[in-house]
Length: 253
Image 1 (cartoon, helix red, strand yellow):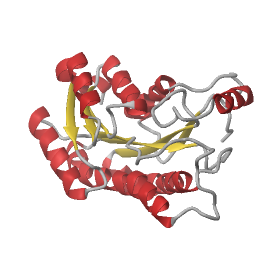
Image 2: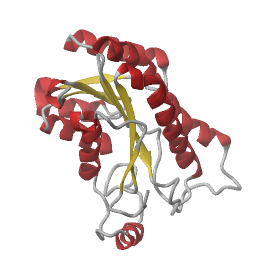
Image 3: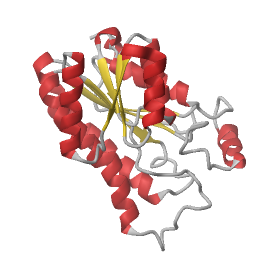
């Protein structure tokens, strides 16, 4: 299915990386269901900018019932089931290495918060989307990951563990859903310059990462978003269960 034929759900699609993904999709002809939890102003601004190509809908993706209502509203408004999902929503988190809790003091509640946001949220959208995807014989699921579990240059224990679990779900879901024409992949970035979550990162960290990459710069949200589009397009039709690292070559494999 061409991007121009798709309504794509982007969770957390109103700001930061999510907004960059939304803009990239609209640029390439897709229409976007912009899911948000608290960022109503940003979501409505995207609606004002792109008109009928954007449908803002509020839902907490960690709430399974709210996700069902989200999908029902989207289908009612668009006249078709959502067959493409980008699981981008991030539980409240800041990439600030100086403020992160260390392993000897971090509370389980922080792990639970990140697991709920990354893993439970993705599970809710996948389970809700599957019926519509099967009805069309087509589905594209893209989960947003991180390169930190391969290269924990800053050990964010809770965030990294949750994203590692999401990679596992990506691969097991790909196995289950492949026979239905549904692919499940992950795109993993490093630190992006700049999103709301990375705004607290000290400048020297950006400089350190840039100097360690072959391209000598930090990846932007827009560059990351372009890689997400590959997994939603016909060009990736034979690719599933994969994790594409988009970080300027910092991490290999």
